[in-house]
Image (tube, rainbow, N blue to C red):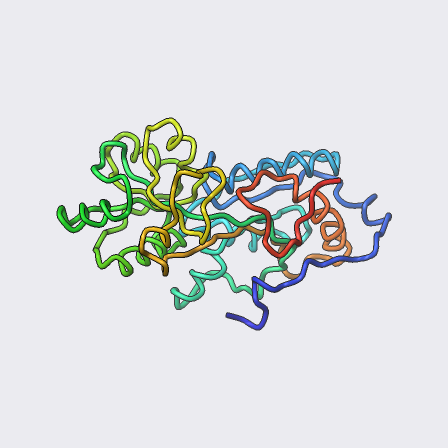
Length: 290
């Protein structure tokens, strides 16, 4: 990782400047979300857009730019003018995994000006409702029996791909990834039976699990997820090494004028806690909206 760690960078706070608030913003703001509509990132981005609209009085547009585990969206953000009118959401795939796995990228982490974390969440392994497994032990046995089972996840070099490989290594099984541009398409294929297994966020599958249109077999955090209390963790099912929590945050382009940075630094920590999330940021940087 570069000199600064994404998991320890502080939220930038500054003394209020009324002149900044009066001069910026004076036109529409854009939020680039590196995910397809309907997923957790999209839900969070659109909720943030509404909060920013209320606070600034300016239109706030969400633009979905998918692909390459969030890399396409982050590239678009960092190529935008450094004027504060383009905010970018990012996740662990784009800022942790891609830099480690790819020899060259179209952006550097030094191009980013990290504004604030938003929330963290966990991943799940889900199967089609007709898949003959109701827990991870039965799932592992079925994968070994049938061989050649594939799982769907967004992106080839992405956090769900990493989790899928962690499961395979811990369980001593082999599965091939079917990469999707977003989770929505993968979940649709899972419910239709086109795809037997899905690895992705709990947000993408929790409602379908509740209604029985698919089945979640395990989650990747150490404790059970409040929204899926009947689903055991991977650790509970004999896979203690399979643990992963993803995160989303907000960035501007490095080189954005300091008064604009200060404007966001004052505003975002105050409103970010009102954005729907699976779990608040564990450091406590995000605060509930007053």
